Amino acid sequence: MLDQLESNYNCSNAGEDLHNLLQEAEQLRSRSGASPEDQEHLNRIENQIRFIRNKCSIPGEG
Image 1 (cartoon, rainbow, N blue to C red):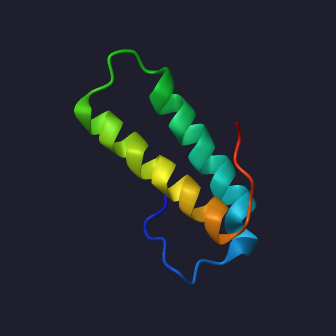
Image 2 (image 1 turned 30 degrees about the vertical axis):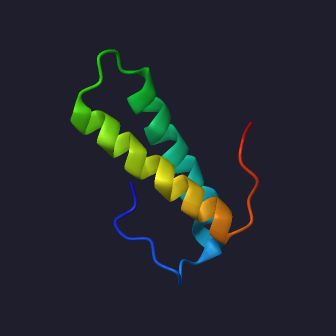
Image 3 (image 1 turned 45 degrees about the vertical axis):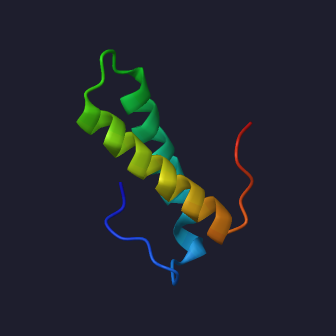
């Protein structure tokens, strides 16, 4: 998960950042019996993914 995302996010980092965030989200989703903390962490990651896709005009999956 990225430490801080702000309106001045540099979209030149989007490819690598999205790749890392998507991998981290998939790892959390694959855990059985995820804790409330895991779910909260996953929610933050998914918010970061949406932020980057919106900011950098990158279409999402599905």
